[in-house]
Image 1 (cartoon, helix red, strand yellow):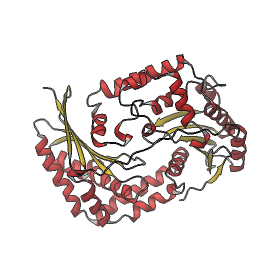
Image 2 (cartoon, helix red, strand yellow; image 1 turned 45 degrees about the horizontal axis):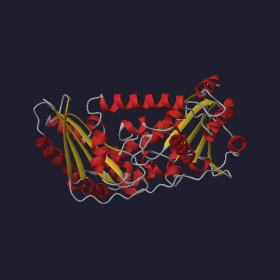
Image 3 (cartoon, helix red, strand yellow; image 1 turned 60 degrees about the vertical axis):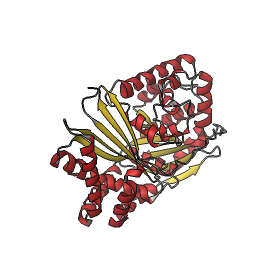
Length: 411
């Protein structure tokens, strides 16, 4: 079931993609800005995520975004990743123009003020404390990312490297960040649902056409060198169990190898039937919990394998058992691989039921350079061979390609 769409580009560079789905009288407007934490400066991190909050603080002509959207019966949300910041809203299709009014005004200019900035800095700082400082193991991924990447800005999380970067943010720098990234020529807008392409184009021209394109911040992204030896780090903190967190370098999302490694993580960690859970939790009872997953980054990114060990178990014993399980990927059968592929195909079909999922998928596919990737992805996974899986497992999940954090209880 292919997703059909039409694409337009306004004179200011805004890309508009329309997907018509008249099954229910709802519309989705999804705006992806090509800015994530990887676009930040090493001494000024956390700003893409800060803007996820600031964009709801009110724009130059609309002081209360949520209030106006709720009047139209809509709701909204946003998320920030290492690569992008994504804003989306849903509302009744007969109120579609309200979405264009709201989104165009905050793309034009936010209602900048020191008070609003201070409010959202406080919110982000509290989030940083709750999620990464005051929560057991909360800083594990931040510590490990900094070890795993030597030059690429995937070294830091979207929340930022440290609280001080957001706490010290000035209004002038925040404005420069906005005008350097939040521009029509740095955005992809997907309008999906009970809409007509010709009407969407007219509304886009009416509400977004006059917003000027802007000079974008130029940002050099260094290529991470190939890792040639295993890296290790130890910490001791107030946690209940020993944690072992591992990262492996994997290909970029635009490469076939990314999809192969994603299949591998499904083989390893598809719920309680996954090889890791069966071996290390059920059979050997070395770990209380274990998971494996890809991070979905656009550039060459990460596969993680994270475990909390059972009481009395050693990291040495865990490492041996983990390596044995990973080595057993070389004896993976075609039947096992087909079972994972069938689950994936079912998941792809389910995702295409929801208009919001389709809108987000179209936007991210376009960001990766091929809008039609949303239609190709299922076939890419289906075409992956057993030999490819075994070869990728051997190359990517080897010790010299890994970074490991041992997280010990203080007592």
